[in-house]
Length: 260
Ligand SMILES: [Zn+2]
Ligand SMILES: [Zn+2]
Ligand SMILES: [Zn+2]
Image 1: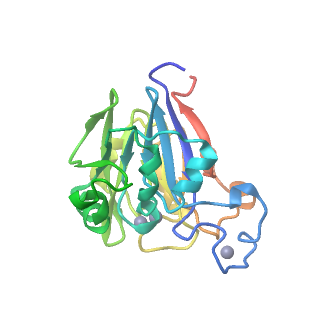
Image 2 (image 1 turned 45 degrees about the vertical axis):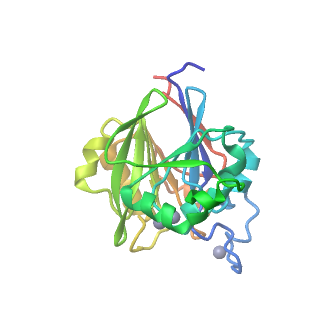
Image 3 (image 1 turned 135 degrees about the vertical axis):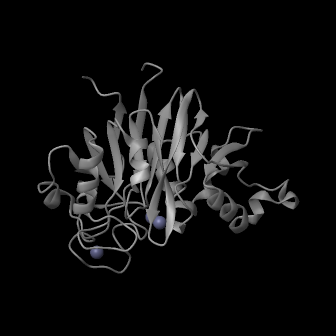
């Protein structure tokens, strides 16, 4: 693999409950189709022999075991809702010995992580078995392992989240709108991973139709819809998507750049 290649693996394609939803007996939750079984939303990027995690989902441990992850070199946080953050403790065994993992997020996200996971950052636990993390608030593009990571501000209900663009890839989860001011940051994106919760409107997530409209404005060659709820039946609803748009599923892997 050439050093400029970038690989994306969808670790989890599901909304905050995961799918099946505990207690639900709907046809998707009872489905045995592998693509209808969704762990909480997260992804892994690989470039220059580094592994960069997008969020530490509630299901991170199972995702790490499933994909055979042996080390995480950095984490990019979209925001701090529980489904994207609460797997953070399972970074413990995946840190390089003696090194803290750089962890990036908005100033607000970094402050929340420090406050909610006090035990990770307090001196008294110095000797304890805890993740070694170096929190860094991002305000704009920053270098990471010989590439540039571009944070993309997104609207997420009453709050905000951060998408990230790296080269030809943009990963935009948990948003009900991509602000006009963020669109220029996405020009020329080849692969777009985009929030699409369900078919009916939601105050903090895009619907499938809204996501398709956003994807058409951005104009990526391939759009992968993620953060999917149990309303979406993979085989049934895949047939209704326009060319170039697909639903994510756990384990989906693709490599950029695409051949011309
Ligand atoms: Zn979420
Ligand atoms: Zn269900
Ligand atoms: Zn969220």
